[in-house]
Length: 220
Image 1 (cartoon, one colour):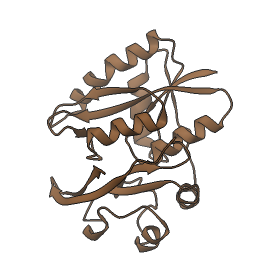
Image 2 (cartoon, one colour; image 1 turned 120 degrees about the horizontal axis):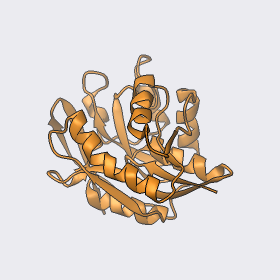
Image 3 (cartoon, one colour; image 1 turned 180 degrees about the horizontal axis):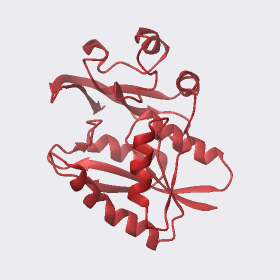
Image 4 (spheres, rainbow, N blue to C red; image 1 turned 120 degrees about the vertical axis):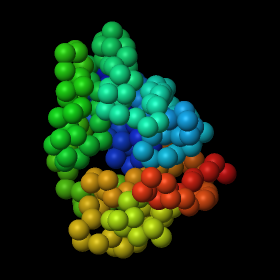
């Protein structure tokens, strides 16, 4: 079995990447890695509370490695923060770092560059998937996820906090990727085949910050 550390955003794509790896022969996901912003006590980009991230780790049965990012965070700041984790993985004999990216070539190239020079290789279990089919497959598996962040210039503010389900997909304009791969929206997963138990949450306050709309999920 090849050792894998998986980059974990709390959202549906990283969760489905984990499930895909678990169903594939030859991989063992030993750790998940999450970038967090201590200034807000939340997961970077997705805006998910740390206690929900910790609950996900327990439900997955996998240890979490936290990468702390400053706010604001430049590319240089990010690269300096993740470099020790890459070195740690290489020292531990980890063969792959996996990512839930779907089709953005520039993002893939950036991740591969970050790992360049180390013995760790980038792995993209979902790469090239048809995102319409993928969205339907994830929803059909019993995955339960909620929209925690969205770009209001691309989709309506009223979708913040919405459940990621068939009704949500049908509400999206044709120009919007059903998996939000172009940054249209981000999610947090609370149930699915990758979890041992459901995480009970409620949708709290909806706020707009730095041009994005966030829904504040809270543990029940």
